[in-house]
Length: 274
Image (cartoon, rainbow, N blue to C red; front, side):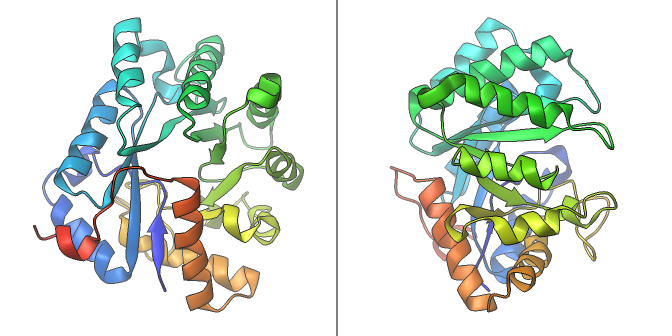
């Protein structure tokens, strides 16, 4: 099956010693596209450095809700400037996290708005993290409210590592969102995700690992890696009743439509060992 990993933090320190081997394993598993999103100024710059080293990768730049309170105007200016790079295909990851609340909610909201404005200005999609406490949906409802407040000027968005009720997914799809699924879908409490998988149009459905986090069944718990997107993708195909080859072709086509890149993207075969 052809594969994509639409969200993979390859610049995380857990990959410092063997990122090339990790990419080799991903290529052997069939992964043709990998998007490396930033979460603050350092990781956004590191995402671009990886794309420089491995030109078949894509980058995203932005500020995660956990880091919302720690980004000053100078750091944001650097991120905003880097968003113009043609190898940057999205803004993020950003969003809201009302579960762990590592940054105050008001700071998260201000950060989200700034990232969404950057996405709207550049015409690149915003990658959105959204988590509520177990049994709650306050972050999902707040995120919907923020997007609706933009009206016709809202940027395109990708809901990363989907979590939430079916009606939240329906509302996001009505706003034109793409939805990406990760190993989180296999965890207790995430059962509604299976119904969401069947609902998403083919051209707005993505698979991801969120490496080094959210390992699916069978993957190492301490360090998820892009090769393991094959587990989530196989599950998605089965739920939708798709043949693996057909589903894989759809994944790559959806990725290329959602994360359009103006600069040429080299093929993995030409670059991973180079």
